[in-house]
Length: 267
Image (cartoon, rainbow, N blue to C red; front, top):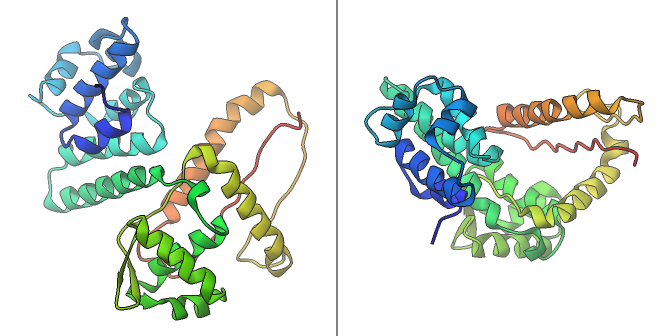
């Protein structure tokens, strides 16, 4: 039984083996898929180079990592693991090895957490996320009472979210104190609408509080565009937004910031 792309990326430690298994997966669905085809699409001039990588006789040149991830149609989270593996294997210094190993583990944790669904959350998805993220700010085992006070949230709701997070393996509970066991929680695409609606409702409640603050951005416009320009710009804008969040996010954070971006055609 063939693995999914996510399973391949999560279970293989070597990039060469990962590429080989992803190749077999694509080949099983698309008979025309070949090493030569991969080289052509990723603009890898030497078929021998890629063959050697797949045979684990050499490491992949970094400039081919991202194009190759696109050849396999990896989504953004899967691609981060793929590229991080390439960087880790190419690293020469101990400090670079440590840096890219950490990036790789964070990317894998992020992909694993995609299995959780907002449909399973009992309560408000926005508050569920706030409770989880608050432990990243506090950085030490903390009681439900302290979280309730910090977030100005009802203690009963806090206890419910802590229980759900603990049951899913994202928190560790000991003697009434809670600590993180995962860096991030993401949710299934199938229930993405529930999350968006929850975040938008929270934004409505906070508009008056933050509309004039230099620490926030609230913008809303309807503009006329050409379909061609819009479709060309949208992927770039999405990448910019994702990169901005990725660059800001840190395990050493001291505050929470909410991102809400909606761009869509009138009809």
